[in-house]
Every structure is written in structure tokens, then in C-alpha cells.
Image 1 (cartoon, protein in one colour):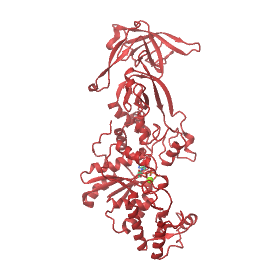
Image 2 (tube, helix red, strand yellow):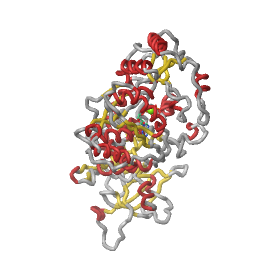
Image 3 (cartoon, helix red, strand yellow):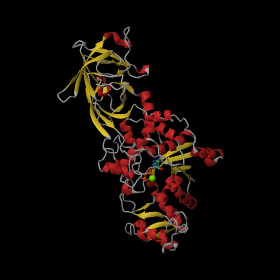
Image 4 (cartoon, helix red, strand yellow):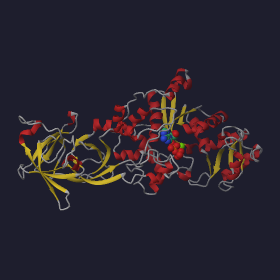
Length: 566
Ligand code: ATP
Ligand code: MG
């Protein structure tokens, strides 16, 4: 469950791994496989990024020793970027269990080289300085059905272009007054090839280069050249970049002096039900305080999932399960929860917690008596046992009692008998209510002959087994229960604002009664509260003596059920 280095068990093969295998078989790149994960540091990573991280780092792990995966920050847009994001991204990739070793790079480290490449393209007559206004640019660009038309500045001489580009760098023009464009084909059916912008003027402080630059390369220009500078062999990106591939290749083919010749391939991005994944929208949720920060456990961010108690192994397993294809699809959130449950079921310690307590007085149990029962910490016997105190007054779960039981209800009801897990059976003798008719207490009796799972002669064994905590010994703890953040399966699919389908019940804070051993739960530790769900001692707010628990996931596995039905 910790961030152990994942074993390089090969993922199922997929079209990208097949392509790489074919390259290796053909002896390309001297047998090297070099990939990269290239986030822009303008937000926190989310579960979609985890798919890309598992793919890129996973492929490198599967091809040792002649392989590596770089972490490269594509930091070409200083207006939106920040070191807070850089730091969080590094933390999240490491937490997921991946290691870039010495291969940490920043596109901003290449600014001088990228600038020189641009001069090279100008010198070759392949780039020009244009001064159309943004509106004119749109008009000249044409549409999907109509070709564009050439900018009046398209045929400037090489000398004039060089001079203007140098003056752009020197700060002689104001922001947006000039751009450098590639000179490709204004009639191309692919709009990305209609003289795309390569450089813009932008006076913005950069988190690494400070105020050294007032021109910045466009993403589509910086990305392929950064890949080539790092000798990336396989540049894997999401499908929306498919139409950018010709520009990627044009740059690789037209710039001289590149150490590598990467090629780009595209795969379908991850989409999850009841989730938005656009960084802009996630930022909006944070900025408008609709959630409690980037690491709010309801967020689809890696940091949110970590805080909720999802484990790196579970997220990696989920990514392996969904695989990599070229088809857009929508994955069920329940599938991710299924992976989380599988991991926690194997690894989380067991404990008793009652979320909605109702008091039970065991009338024939001696007042003042306390006994300690031995309970296993896990189905795995190696994890040992602990002592759980029991006394005359206990709490059980409200839902484990029904005054008028429906058919098939095998837990506690008036006159009915139920087993208290690891203890003995009790029978409900009386229901005490307050003046409003609310149940405040159940009076029960116990039968000493039913200890250790025994059934006295001639009696039927109760079918129900419920959990409990000793009232005198229980601790009160804040427990945060999470539901889906959005009620719609696809919050941003329609025309409506995605905020309109935020789930008003996505967070419920309650005070639970927990067994006393949980008082000292270490922040960041996982538990299964038996019969209730998986809980995680909040790494920020939980303190020894005053634990706070996040519900990671319930016990019911709707995905496994769906599978069984299918
Ligand atoms: P934007 O570019 O709009 O800020 P982005 O989600 O593309 O957002 P990047 O930082 O550019 O963010 O993403 C880094 C890498 O993660 C890219 O290679 C991108 O293709 C990949 N990625 C982003 N979202 C997903 C997703 N939902 N599924 C799979 N890969 C993704
Ligand atoms: Mg992007």
C-alpha cells in the first residue's frame, strides 16, 4: 500500500506497446525506448494524468535496461504556471510509485535553443514575422471547408524577418503586436498546418526564467523540439493531438541539429463518470471554494485521491484494467472503486466503528464489569489481534435495528436475537423512546452460553452478526463521508453549466463512536470498519488522540455485482 516501486509486470499489450515492440524488432533507435510525461505546471494532476504516467513510466520499466522515462515540465505559458504546481506534480508522480531518476527537464531550459531553431527556420525561409491582428488572423485562417489566404506579411525577406524577430526578443514591440509563424501551407486541409504561430510576445514573469524573455514559444512548437532535444523515441499523447501530428513531423524534419527523431502516437484520454477532468474546471472548483482545495477528497486529483485513502497500487491497477486504446470511452467510477477495494481488502487493518449509534443496555450484564475480547486485526493472521473492551452498555448501528422488521431482516428487532461479533448473542426485550417517539435506547439481555459462536441445545442460531463498541470505552471521532461530486454521469457533456449538477450531498460530516484502539490511529493509515467501509485517518487533520477519518469507499461493490449479472 505504500509507494513501493511497482513490479514491472508487463501490462496487457496494446497498440502502443505493439508499435514499440515492432520498432525494437526492426532495430530502430539502437534498441532504446525513451518516453516522457510532459505536464504543463498549471494545475494539479488528476486521474487522467495517472493513465498517461502509468503508460509512459510503465513502458520504460518494461524495457530496461535500454529505456528511461523523463519528467518534463512543458512550461511555455508563464501566465498560468506556478512552482506550487511543479512541486505537487513531482510529489504525485513519486507517490504513484514512479521515478524519473536524473531525467527531470523543463521546456524553459531550452528557451535559448528553441530561439536559435526559430532563427534557423527564418533563415531557411520557413518562418516569418506576421502582424495581423488576432481578428484578422482568424479571418485569414479560413475554415474547415474553405482554404485560408496568405498573410500580407508572408513574403518578407529573410533579413527583414530576422531583424523583426530579434527586435521581438529585444522587447521593441508590445504584447500581441507581432507573432512568428511557420510558413507551411495556407490551403492545407489541416488547419494546424496553415502557417501556425511559433512565438508570441508576452510580458509575463516566468517561474524559472524570470523576466529574461518577453517572447515565448507556442506549445506546438516547443513540444516536438523538446522531445527531440531529449532524444525521446516515442512521444505518446492524447487523441486531440492527432491533427497536430503533421506539424510535429514538419518541425522535426525541418530543424537541423536535433539529436533525436521522436515520433508521436495518440491514445484515448481517460474519462470517468461523475467527474470533470479539465484543469480549468478543477481550478474553478478550487477558486470558488466549491471544494476544500485541490486535495479535497472529492476531487479527481491524485492529491485528493491520496487524501481520501486511495492507494498508488489501486490507481495503477485501475490504469492497467482500463488499458490503452484509440477509442474514446467513458469509464465507470465504480471500476476505480473496485480497484481501491481490492487493495484495501487485502491490506487495511480491521476495526470497529459505529457511524449512526444507538445505545444498547445489556440488562443482565453486571454493572461495572469490563471484559476484553480478542479480535483479529486482519483476515491475514500474521497481522495479529487486539483486545476490544466490552461492558454493559454498547452502541450498535441504527440500521442494525428495526422496530417492525421486514421479511428477511436478520439483525436486531423486538424479541429477536442477534450475535455481537466476537462476543455473544443478545435478545431485544424493550425499546425506549423519547417524548417525540424517537428510539433512544434498546434494553437487551445476553446469553452467556452463546459465547465463542456456540449455540445452546434446541435453539436456532441467529443469522445476523453485528458490530458494536463499548459505550464507556468508545471514542468520538469526526468522520467525513463522501459521495460523487456530481449527480450527472457526464457533468460537462450538455449545454448546462457543469456546476449546476454538483451534488449537494457530496460531503457529510458526522461524529462516530469508534473502538478505543483507534484513538491513536496514525494519520495516513487505512482501516476497514467492519461491515461499514474503508476509512483513512486524514493525513492533515487527524492527530493522535483526536483522529479524523475519511471514508475512502464503501464495502458494497456495485461494479463486481454488475460483472456478475452480465
Ligand atoms: P491542458 O493542456 O488543458 O492544461 P492537460 O490535461 O492536457 O490540460 P497536461 O499538463 O498538458 O494537461 O497533460 C500532461 C499529459 O497528460 C499530456 O501528455 C496529456 O495528454 C496527458 N493527459 C491529460 N489528461 C489526460 C486524460 N484524461 N487521460 C489520459 N492522459 C491525459
Ligand atoms: Mg495539455
